[in-house]
Image (cartoon, rainbow, N blue to C red):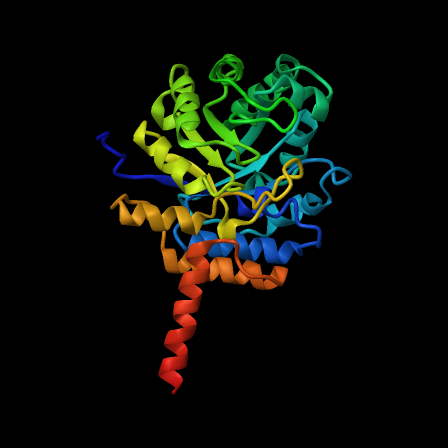
Length: 314
């Protein structure tokens, strides 16, 4: 049996990737409060917002207000997604104290996805990020890359490990610090996860490779475990299972941070994150959205709390 990592870093992407697909507008103050609750729970990596055109992603139109509203804690890294140089310029137009610590750039592992969504080849899309990487690093800002649709594409179907490695190599060439393998539509299974991760590890050290899994087919937690088996120790996840994918009908969003944490705790893996704190954050944002969390762990623990409160009151 492989030796699993003794410590794992969880990156909560709920405020950005989780909320961006919500149809109802979520107030900037709510987003700030969510970030505060996540860091209070012990998370040290939070993807806060994205600097994209509000025409394309209206939910992220309050990006500057959210970055300005956060009370930062030492040791917490606040990241933002930028689609191009214009996005980076917008992120850096605020006072320096409000700048992100890290920017996230992205490219698809599928030519069909790249052509269909941004009307250019994978190689062209990565090349557009070259000046972004250079400018960010010149300011001391870390650059994290995401390889999207790495385990399956809504247009071409299967995505091979060779195709994933091609994009990883391109990202390495433009100088990114970290490479995430993203199962954007949630069709990946453990064997495919391990094959993709092993290709990424040919180009990046293990501490600079991460997994980003969606839970469309309830494979998210299993895919995290599969990645742990090859030594990966950094994972994106989303509070309350927030998120979704407009390209996959029935997608339930990112794997829930609290579901991943419940498994990691059971494995004796250290994260520095409080499960109760995450459940509080999940309950908060879910109540704002007017629904229950998607997360199984949050629902189970909230039911347990309610039962204990009822018993204490009787």
